Length: 260
Image (cartoon, rainbow, N blue to C red):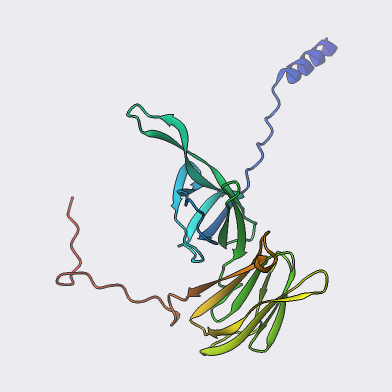
């Protein structure tokens, strides 16, 4: 009898459903994203950043970073482009759709990224290049070189020399607190040992702005192989504190809230 009871208990246990396995957690990121074109494409598309079910409009300018967008979502942020579908609405107007245009990979430690959009006119696509724009890594009064080429880049600024490897960023060891007119020279050190001077001029540096210097390598004529661009980011609070709030219009009194 006890044997039958044991069999019955085992059958009941076998019939019980096993607890469902925990669903894998979807990794997400939170990061400020700022966009800029390297140069405008022939046809400037209407862009938006996908964030959940929402689309956040993005209207970048050439070599001028946009205001930060507080992104929260997948580890690969998707920039969308508005296109016509070839179909028409009932009123005869063309139908539009949003399609992926570029992907921005966001690392686990990224908090503030600059995103450079480099248009590819051959197939109407876009290449993205990202760089750390956070103040901790890139304070005002400094110069950072972002190397998107395949060559090592040497930079001499006010007597300080630093190297930047392919695909990496380098930063001048000097921080300029006072207004300084400095000589800068940038050269590509190619694999065959050749040194190609890319840039040589005077620049003004001080603690009220920071300078981003970009090197991009493109296919084409040899004398146009390396292209350089620069972004200046001015400190909106040069004294270290935000400006006082603007006084309200009229008699300066804050309007009273209506009672319910």
